[in-house]
Image (cartoon, rainbow, N blue to C red):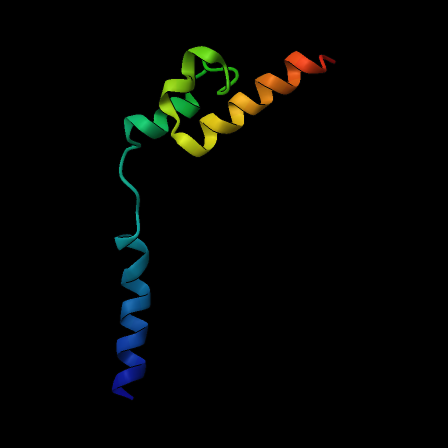
Length: 67
């Protein structure tokens, strides 16, 4: 019985504890209206190695076989 009451109390209080605060600057960037395309060359400094490598591969593919 105590375990059930404890579980019920925690499940009622848990949603309030999980509320998010304001977005950080790293996340706000993706929601700014002036950013139309994140892969644009002027925004690439915000990304790390796995993604920048994919950007480079995409640039090479577009150079070799433009649409």
